[in-house]
Image 1 (cartoon, protein in one colour):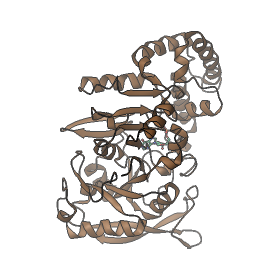
Image 2 (cartoon, helix red, strand yellow):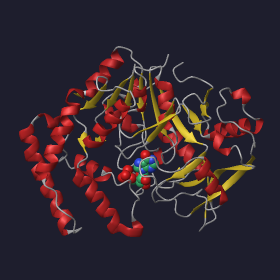
Image 3 (tube, rainbow, N blue to C red):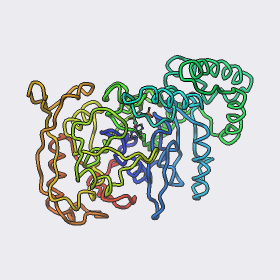
Image 4 (tube, rainbow, N blue to C red):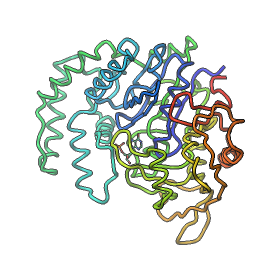
Length: 430
Ligand code: IMP
């Protein structure tokens, strides 16, 4: 039996990972968020109620599951406290079963201010960040000046560190961006208030996870964003600032690679992207309008309309390779229910040289034009189907084609937003 599985996105995020994590966590003991921050938005529908999580692992909606926010995550304490409150209001009580790494770096108000100010200054060359301070917080981590969760335990040293870092950011905010400076004492007060809520949750999560592995517990590692937004392997510089690919699990938690038994790549049956950057299969026509509306493709963190496009098999194969994926989960199949014809980009053509590529370098996509293969649509309702044999033949053929193109099996298909709208072809834990 497989014990530890990773669930990560193969595209530019918003693949529907949260729902799959939620679905599979009913069989798990721990669910771990290991990178990113509250730039992520995982929308879950439980008993017809919509819950959006940004930081807390999706699995905690099951009362038996322990949630971990490990060292690789950058944490906005005020957002975390708000999320815990929202969960409690919805009768999900997580305070005794959510642990937060003492070595995770904090996102503080000046990170958000500088993220927004930089994007504004970049104008049409902006990255299109979520404005949540993610990049600046990771910069501080690498520059070894972060304030970490563990620093909250000593008010005196916290105050000294905070004064220093606020001074560093105020210099930039005032002189370069003509913005308002921050008062470190106000930030300190807010931090101490939030600390009172999370104090008992602060732990060495690396130790917790390694002893969970030793005790043969079942762990799900929940990816955020998607592989093509990875800082090293994505469409740089239009990426997020963490490793959303498989390596992020190892560095972001402190467990070794031999402990990972199965890696599931979640892939939407079309593509979306928020923010700027290359997107070879992007659509600008009626199909774009259709996918946005039927797929509700509006950011759960920022509300922005997502750019939409056909499934990109070149990108998918890249993700299969760099993550050494075991299998795929295809999501949002029901969104295609009213389309007469669907397409998959099977290769790129360089518009300058006319050369054709079936694999590509993902920081050089600007000149790539998609080459499509067409498939008949099914024009039948697949929403809520729970057995593969009940899918229309054209939908089954489309799924089979993705499997062939990706070169790995499809183990799960999602046919709707509810946690039960799911077809399990092969259960990841078996
Ligand atoms: P940042 O992570 O806020 O710095 O944003 C960098 C890029 O990643 C932007 O294009 C964002 O739109 C994108 N991004 C960040 N988080 C998500 C996510 O959860 N889903 C989809 N795109 C995201």
